[in-house]
Image (cartoon, rainbow, N blue to C red; front, top):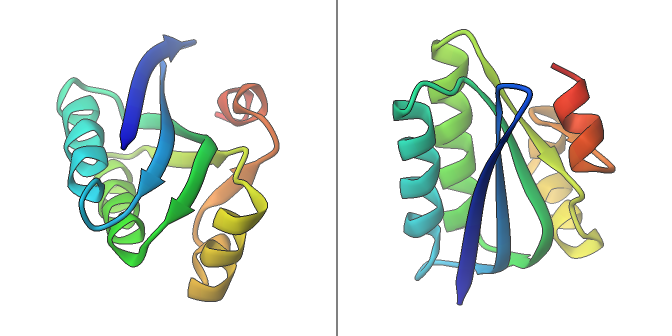
Length: 111
């Protein structure tokens, strides 16, 4: 099960996900990110400290959101990737596409 919480800090949308991002829940994450972008946020921090698993479906959703915000002149940063999720990002090469920070606060302040 995936839980998602949204907050705003310094005009940055902070999307905190908790649980597994797999083929059955990736669409939920994608829908939330799309809604945040539609609400006018083009600076997003995806806090994945409590995500214990991310499948390729989840990776597709975050890459899609990244493309949308970059087309809008913004960016999306990742915060607090667990070791397991970071390995998936590294294997897929996405660790070179996303800026990944040790904390959500650092990611927010990087804008």
